[in-house]
Length: 307
Image (cartoon, rainbow, N blue to C red; front, side):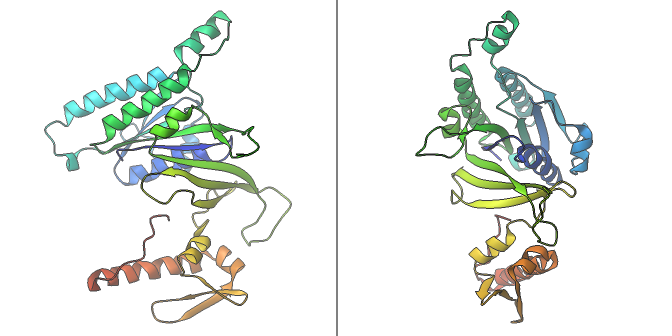
């Protein structure tokens, strides 16, 4: 909240799934009102409901947009009404709002729209990059003091630089500099079933997610999220790697072992840890219990914001 975040990636990498699905759903659970500015016209109501999003008008606002200017006007008008309505209400009691732009890559400029009507597509001479930077900059100034934030999706394209092969985020460098958090997503094939066995059939996607920029946490952290076609995102993706990094799971020969709060040793092969969600939930519950105890004896609890 008070920030502008961007999830950028290639087509089908799970950007809309995470932003317009998971983030919107969790915002609603926290009592925050999501306002979706849809430039792709692909957010089907049935799809949103299957992801657990409440699509009722009082819980979700949706506006079709096609121009960067339209986004700026909608956000500006909304903020004027918001500040007027809540001017006599303490900040902590105001309604939280989360704007979602899905996506920046599909937005156009008035120049492009006019050229399309005339059949003379010359390009916008860099106007879109300037407008996106201005949009992000002004949103940061508007949102900063309030319980309001913006999360956007954007497109990437293949780098032609042999010395820097990472995908390039569209929209210009000014937009990247102005954003608070930028996450890069790459699409890989998921060819592992629920038992952890490799198969030849593509069962879903593996979204490799990398924090490119963050002012609030360590950058360049990575996690791989599995999104099977049949069941949707696996919420336990990446936990084994996280537990190993935090020293909760340690190697013991060919096994990974965990010592719980009672001193009992839980030992299993890595494959078993990856596929047995009850084991992973056991660690999470155990850590939560330890943290509750630590708060009473002035010990430093284990942090799990990444989860």
